[in-house]
Image (cartoon, rainbow, N blue to C red):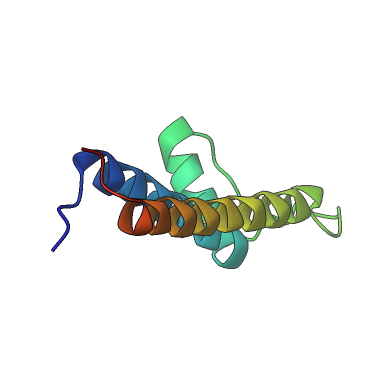
Length: 91
């Protein structure tokens, strides 16, 4: 049985955080906007709609950034874990 290094665990946890953050930015933007408003203390409409403005352009930017963050997390998690599991052990 191979021993998992602490570096692998830390990188996997950071990748999991990136995956969760990306998924939230893509699929739960209203929740992210409410959290951001609570952090900054500025009132923000949770749906991202401003009165009389139609579509919110930040919605698409958040979706694109969320997808990129989600994909980055999945790739880092997969590649780093596979490398840690299948690379030959150092002497």
